[in-house]
Every structure is written in structure tokens, then in C-alpha cells.
Image 1: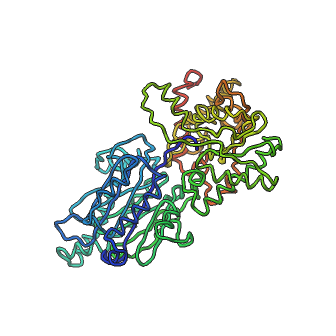
Image 2: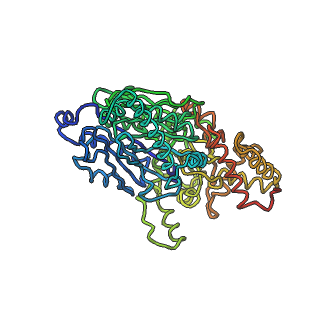
Image 3: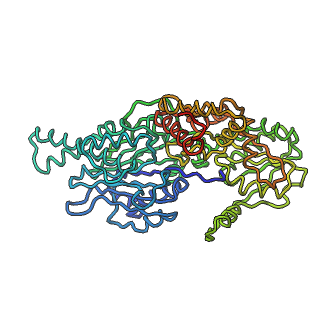
Length: 582
């Protein structure tokens, strides 16, 4: 993707099941757990570069000494920074890490995970991190405040910490009463509580209030570890267990590399399911919420997840190969005078799929690395126009890679979202090669709708497909359609995504043509045609990840539908209020 989207976030957890000196004797270092956590986080650096944090809990610390540690840092070097602060006294059996990309616009160390809630009872200490975005945080906030609580910060992470902390308090208090009823006193009560905390109770009474996509991870001071996935399976999580460790990460290859495993040794956490490890090291799976209709995110497969995953690699290749007929049509069957290439770096695997597809039709397929991604230049110039000019040179081309005015250029990207970089950079530099025709290919369908489950695209007007449809509506004087959709969004924002009606009068080809018209620089000479993946092709290539709301507008939760309708209301109020009948 030529325009980087931010994605929230990456998680890593390790539970060491043996005494700490076991790992020092066997692996030669007291930092075995931290070394593994560091590797897991570095292998997920793609998922978060704005900040990182770690936490650890030691189960053998004597009273009067710290037993729950946390380190956080901001910036692209945050992982290195926090691990440079790790000392031997922080070594523990429970380890947790997080990488952050903000999708809310909030920045600062305050918003970097993990979040920690302190208490003088070990069992009431709670540390949370997650890969999540909640669509109904207003409702959860009202629920909390109606109980008399007063969260210090308004944000889904802090509010979740307070709600889950409240439920953890209730669980501990339940066990306190139970221990007293059994005649226990003093530290025997404490031991009883820590041995009998049922974290599944805490998760059920917390997560039932949420609408959104999430993998929520946590540690307690008394030694409970857990990770729970949303009921629709929107956000991913994978885990591994043996007699030495229990480990969980956002991506499967991370566990494979860190622990030298085959893919089949790793299991995906199911929708609504929690992985729970108790203080004594016993682990189990627990269904916390009933599983909804599966909506595992297809964008994870197309773009965000590591392409080194066995299944993702195959899926991305298939996404490319399936585009062969549409590309063949766009070049009028002229394979001999066509060069195939890709936008670095995430589209490379789909590109291999395209070339495989064309080699089945033609023995020789001409391939070149036409586009290069340079080191990101520092935009130290403050003038906006000059800064934009510098940004346009993040990409460069291989001069002489095409025969001018004779060769078509087919070039694939994994998705086309905003179109800004195509307009400001890619189309301009490709035009210098004087191709007979540029066929710009997207391995995903047209991105038409916002995301509210953890990716930073929440405004309709960001999408070139949406802007193209609005332009078509304006050109054809279809003002009544805008009015009808606006009123429908206001009347019923929860049950139907009314924004979908805006696209119904137009074909994909009409929208493609308008996108080209809008993104094509005025002085560009080469003809351009867009080819997008079909919805059917997406589902055929990624059959286990049917979450396609970016492309179809079918949100898996009521919160997503509501926010999309509200986004259209906001758009109209800001830009087309004069044509709307309220």
C-alpha cells in the first residue's frame, strides 16, 4: 500500500511454567523470558511504531518488595528503549508486551499500553494491553459512571481497565466472603483468594458490555494471565503451549520464529474464546462470549499481517493470480508488449501470483522492478508545498525498464485507499517512462467504507472511491439520493448501513473511471486504467476471513453500522448542508 495505514496494535504474552532458575540453567541466562518477549515484539514491529510497553509479574517475591513491573516508551525505537531498562529484579513468570499504533489521534506516554491498576492486595492488581477498538465506549462510560465510578481519562483503554478492575475487585471480595465462611483467617484468606480467582467470571461480566473488535490481554498481581478474542473474530490471536511455556501473539509466524515451531503446532484463538493460565500454571480455553457470525478481518490478510505466514503467503498469491483475466482484458491481450511490476513492498507476493497466472497463458512474461521505495526523507522544510514535493520523491523508478510508447505497464498494489500518493507521486514518476498504457491493479476490492475496529480510516471522504461516487452524483444532479440517504441515516442509524445506497446506481467501471479522472495529474500523458479485485475473488482467496465491511459496508456489529451512518451525516453537514431537506 503506497499510503501507510496505521493499525492498532500487536500483543505478545509469555507464561513461564518452570521455576526461573530452570531457564537460567538450561538456556544460560536469567533473561530467557525477556529475550523471547523481545523477539516476539520485534517480529511484530509492523503492527506498531508509535510506542511500546512491557509488564512482568514475579510470583516468588516477598512482601515489601516490588513484584509487578512495567516499562513504556514512545517512538520507533521504543522496543529497544524499554528492554534496555530491564534488570534482573524484573524477571518474572508472567510477561506481556504491546506495540501501539494510535487510531484515535491520541498520543503521549499516557496512552501507551500496558495500563496498570494498583492495589495493596496482589489479586486486585491488574495490567491490561490489547489490540482493539471499541465502537460503544460512550455506553460503557455511562454504565461505569451510573455505578458511581469516575474514570480519570476518557478512552477505551482506561475505561476498560476500570471496568475490568471493578469486576476483579468483586471476584476477590466474593472469595474473601467464601474464605471467611470456611473459617480461614489472615494470610490463609489471601492464599485462598489467590488460589481460587476465577478470571473467566471477570471476563464474562466485563466483555459482555462491548461492541468492537479486540484481543484483550491481561495479568494480575497474583499470577493470572489471560487473552480474550472478540465474538466475531475480527482481530487475530495465536497461541502455543508446551511443558515450559504458554505464549500468545497477534501473528502465527511470530511464535514459529521465536520458539522454532511448525505452523501446525500453533493454534488460533477462536471467536469469543479466552486463553486462561492460572497462578499454578494450569492453562485452559474458556468460551467467554457466544461466538457470533465469523467476521475475521480480510484486511489483516491483504495488508497488515506478516506475509511470511504460510497461509497468508498463499492467499496473497491467489489474490494476484485471480486478477489475470481482468488484466488481460485491460491490455487487450498484448502480453508480449507488457511489463509486470509492483509497488514495494507489501504487494510483492500478489505480484508473484499475477506472473504465475500469466505464465500459464504465455511462456515468457516480462517482469521488472519498476518502482523503488527510497529511505523516507526528513521533511525539515516547513513550507507545505515544498514538503509535499519532497514527500512525492519517497518512490523512484528504474529508468529504461520500459520501451517508451510501446510497452504497457501493469503494476499492482495491495490496496488503493485514499489515492493521495498515486496522484502526488506514483503516477507522475511512472509517466516519465512513457508507457503505452498504465494498468494500476489493486489486489483488494474498492475500499468504500470506514473501519471502526482498529485501523485508522474512519472518515468517508478519505476514500477515493467515495469521493468518486459523490462526484458522479453531483455531475448527474442526483441530489435526492443524498437527501434520502442522509434522512435514513438519521432515522435508523443502527440496523442498516444506508451509505451502501450511494453506490448502487453505479458500476465498478464507472467508479474506476471517475477515480482515474480525479487522481490523474493534469500534465500526465499516459492513459491509465484501474483494475480492482472482486468481492467474490476476495472471498475465494481468503475463505476463512469473511470480514469485508471495508468493501461491502456489511459491518459485523451494530456499532460499526451506526458509526458509518454517523460519518455520512457528519460529511453532509460539513460539505453539502445546503442541498439537504432536514
